[in-house]
Image (tube, rainbow, N blue to C red; front, side, top):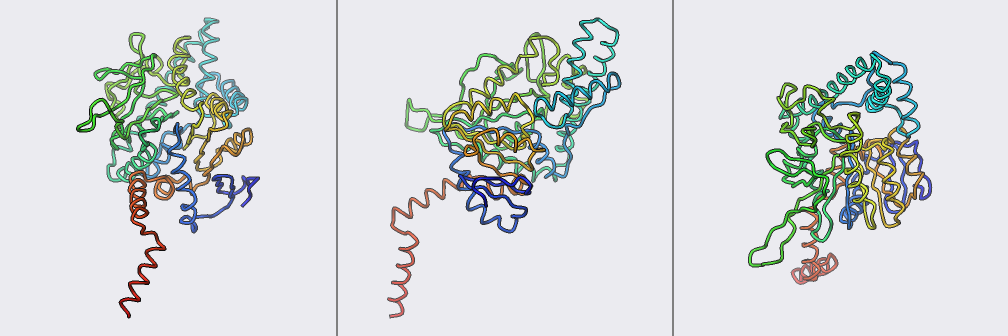
Length: 428
């Protein structure tokens, strides 16, 4: 244990309160660690303002638990301008502190190059555009295939879905006096939405409407309430409600008639489903596909990131990250602004150090504002849910039981004394 320095060469990094622990193996002591970690997280999860940020690691954890492989972010090689795109993607990813470049960097670089070629009105622009369209279509097909394969095998996916529901319920179970949980994700898939539906969690986003939900720029603070029997004028919050923001868009978001709509694309749909766009470059609303013009380059992403900043950059706010590798500079910048406020706190739960990006981010900021659970033990989805995340329903019952025990004076010492007296009288 070292209270001042973290040995990042160790497999597992744990920081709770002001104590650091660096170790290679802790599986045999997981019960003891639970006694330290679970109460700490329980307190943090009931902070005044509470947000969850997830990345590709969440999808990987869920699909791995089901024995499936998720859509990765591996590099995409272009036939035309292959060397130029790859070199610029590598260079730009280093400049933005993203670490190793991935398919998003390749697509972003190709789109920037396409703009220049279109300005020059060269014949090469059409060739590059066609190749970008094909790359985007393949990217979306892979995401759809991840959902399809997961949903195809019900037996293997049942356990993974059970853990996903428990994971989401641990975060969404908030006291009525606290703000709603806000979930932010960079993922294009719908595992979070699917898990919330199965867990009975109501999700609020910027889409309004039932037949064809439409993205609205005006943010209206909608919520779910109910009136208790016999009480009028005092509506109460419905439990299990969360706000959801997909920072990079979603595979079921479409451009239509100058608006953004949510397509009726079921989770696990096949690639020949009628709602799967034939031309991904013109209709799909995802982060790498923002070259249609100045409007789509900033809309709806400006509104989404404004929601992210307003949610976490305020006093007494806590942000928990899981499966996010701190590879997006535009997201990291907002988290840095959050940490300028002394009463804010960030909890990082990760399977590894994300190629050093987590270490670099922590060293750039005040370490006292972090809780760290890093390593394959803490990042394992099953272990995390079973051993360390708060069990909201159980915690409430335990709290009530403890109050009843204290009210009746039946503390452990009183119980022992009572048993001793009863035993002495009986023996006597």
